[in-house]
Each structure stands twice: as structure tokens, then as C-alpha cells.
Image (cartoon, rainbow, N blue to C red):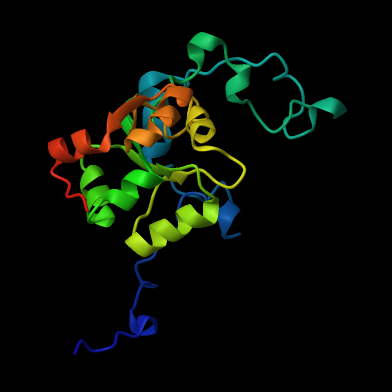
Length: 215
């Protein structure tokens, strides 16, 4: 068994060799600006080498910073909205590197027909960015289905929101959006994909290609 380590016994200070740090007069109230050592290299190297950091000028930068705009100030600081369109950062997918490749929605009927739903979802995450569960059932029914089968879906439709409506909400501004949007379901679920504008793949076809077992 590893001996307990008392953090209070660890000596972290060396009083004999301690020296004043840059900025101690401000942060610790020790010494004065005239007595502090030279600034560290990181504080001056970039400015000396490259000059001032480029930025987008603000129209109200001559006004007091931190004062609300409606009171004659410039507000808390510049936002993305203050910059011109060509200076704003480009959007990227939630996993980085742009839009994700694929989002898959399993229907309630498809999950119910799988021999091992948990294994299917876990294996699908190796080649799918997002996995959801949708169905023309209540939210408690979908929650129960996930709990009983050990599924942790990224999204699912709730009570009052139909499956096609939930998928339609996954547009370009949604974190679950991807280049390929696929509904995997039984034959009776094809209407969900049609109404949402998603690609429909029959469960039998997906199971054969992915090696899933059906009940």
C-alpha cells in the first residue's frame, strides 16, 4: 500500500534563495516599481520582434472602457460583431476541422429490433460522429428504451416534438449537423426521413453492412 503523503510537509519555498518577481509590487504589495527586476522575456520578446498585435479598430475606442454604451462608454470590450465579415473567425465543426462527416438517427423501431442495441451504438461511434434515437413515441418511452439497453444517445425527440420535427431542427447551426444525415429504421419509419429531408437506410441493409445482429 502506498504511504500517505502529507502535502503540508512538502517544502515549496526557499526563503534563502528567493528573489523578487516581476510585478510583485502590484500583486503582493512588496517593494516598488523602481526596485523590481527586469521583465521576463515573454513580456517583451513578441512585441520587440513583431511589433503591436494586429487588431480591428473600434469606432468607439476613444470612449471610456468598461462603461455601458448607453452611458457614454465603449462597453466591456470588442466582440466578434464589431469586426468586418472578412476578419471574423471561420466556423468549424464541434469536433474541429469543419463540418462533421455523418450523423445517424436510429428509430425506436430499429433499436427494438436489434439483438444488442448497446453494442450497435458503441460500434457505430467508430464511424459516426453523432448518434440519436427518434420515434413516434413519448419522451419517457425513449428514455426507458435507452436505460434498459444501456444506450447513451446524443439526441432524441421529446414529448410534443415529433421525430421528423426533431431531425429537421438539426440544421447547419446545430452541433449535430453533418454532411451526411441518415435515418436507420424499419420500413414503417421511412416517412420520418422523408419529412425531415434525411437519407433513409433500411435496418436490414445497415445491419448487413455493419455486422449487426437482429432479433
